[in-house]
Length: 445
Image 1 (cartoon, rainbow, N blue to C red):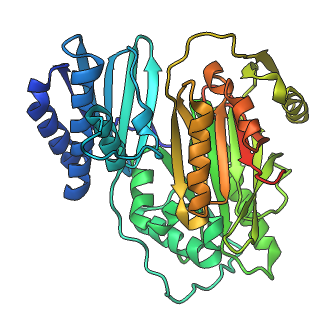
Image 2 (image 1 turned 180 degrees about the vertical axis):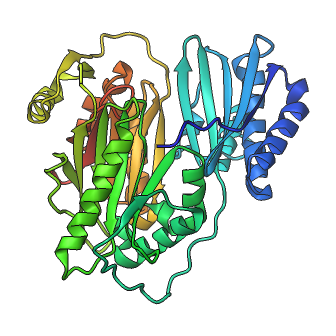
């Protein structure tokens, strides 16, 4: 695995006063352009930053503190982080379900947040000691790969070597993966070869390929840090002849072994692997579980996941409600993981009025992943509004991720169960702690 890459970044520190708005707008726009965003994307990032900065200055901390703004490039995305002293604030407008109001009745402060959230691809909200950090994330724009090309011939060589691919080899790897595997079995970034190249160059993602003596590619595997302690592995993808199983198995084994060796040199404790096929990987991994997803026509697609420890596991704390205690104990017993399961409950403490949910929608696969960014007393109504929106748009596959290392996130588990979600899988150390996946089963599991 390559050495950590120092992220290109810029930063400024300004007083929370809207007299500095022109400074902030110029800083964010020029930083976004310098860090690789195209002009249209940079203008959207600037608009989002303008609205967020005005909201902070006029509503949250007017003249009461400093705002740190940091713009950084992480491979295929540019991120603007706004850090400021923690105070009470209403972030309801960051929800995808928030709707603009008629001008005569509109709350302009909330309208600013709606505009900010709609101008970027993703949002993140985190507490850092006594500071809050709101991150605006915008993807670079890449041309989609052209389809309709002649399908490459299968790899038939028995001799191959494992090595890191060049940029052109990465692009050809993406072509091979699209040619040999169905779209619903591959991540989105393989549809954008330039994005894949930038992801690898950025240092967050890594890839290796199996290459024959004439330069032909027989397989590949990609991985990245899902958290500080867990690596997510995507693959192995093999391009051999299905009638010749031995070379195929040898390539898959070699790629997995090389990946494990590279990851073993890092501080990662765990590895989670998502192979494109449902073959047997028990020589290297423990079976973690699977997720069934559905197309609009009702065709079921199963995605299996596998798991192994890279270094010794000393255990960790899991926050959860009593509703899923049996599921947790059974799963941890099966995976031989030591966990201290602590109960979290609503004891009547004061809550923020409005919650914020993060939505990552993949419309091509009719799928959405949810996370809670900010706690609030309205979580049940907020979740219900999101589910109604997904149903209206024909999105059948809904997954909610709960980071069990954060107690206030686990506190909403009863709300999930009441709305038709059921726990289906645990991803060890995938967040601050283990991430518990809940899948929506409207008609029961």
